[in-house]
Amino acid sequence: MRIRRVRSKLKKAVAIDKHAGLKIFQPETTSFSSEHLYQMLYKHSMLYIKPEGGTGGAGIIRVGLTNHSTSYLLQKDTFSERWDQFDQLYARLSHFIGSKKYLIQQGIHLLTHNKRPLDLRIMVQRNKGDAWEMTGMLARVAAPRKVVTNYHRGGTLHQVDSVLKQYADSNRLQELKKQLEKNALLTAKHLNKHFPTLIELGIDIGLDKQLKPWILEVNTQPDKNIFRYHTNKKLYSKMMNYVRYQILKRTLKKTQANPVPQLLSKTKPKPLAAKEAAHVRPTLSPAPPVPTPLLIRKQP
Image 1 (cartoon, rainbow, N blue to C red):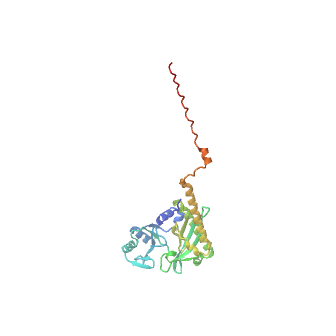
Image 2 (tube, helix red, strand yellow; image 1 turned 120 degrees about the vertical axis):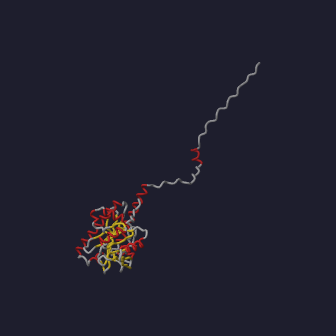
Image 3 (cartoon, one colour; image 1 turned 135 degrees about the horizontal axis):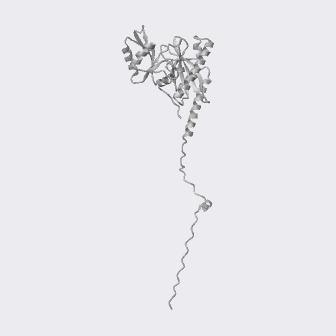
């Protein structure tokens, strides 16, 4: 039984939308087209244009309305452009996208740390009892002038309490973390119904000014190396142990279901010893009787 990886962000978003308790925590998401872009822009004013199968924050573009909706702002990596006409914006996006599949996601005005956007990465894994367990949580802060928080795009890693203490006291922070864990486990259990054999998820959560959590993205092959920087040094080892256990378990199950046939031996049989050969020598049938010659009597 192989471990399933789901690359399509849109498929995962559609699956989450089917759960009423999770749908309210997911930004509106749809496929990229000129019509969808126009409608979503004037509905939400800020959007993220994402590659449907991308990883690590690569290729993400932010677009928004500015100056009382009279112009359009495009931001990619560390540069930005402003356009007066929607057709100009769409043409520019089409240049970046090319023939690749992209999606449009409602933009969330995230909390910031040192005036830079921040979000949370939550790890959820199947443990050795086969139950879903939250195994770690880290905060990620975007690099200067960048629109994504990913570590591999220059983002920095922080302990959750250290960046959120400016927005909530200790009691509110503990309640928030319990809610995040509950939502993360619910997300894992629900997605596993749509995509069986999942063993781990890296869930990216954004928080708005009201501390409402938003499911920005769900990764089915998350990078666990970032948890080497967690203050709890045992987390990374625990995560890797869970992964190895689940892979081994599935490998053994597959082997038992489809045993490998034994190959016939190519070695020649050893000759039998003399005593052993005597016991197995075939019995000879008795020789036929010799016919008695006829006597011919002479006539007198």
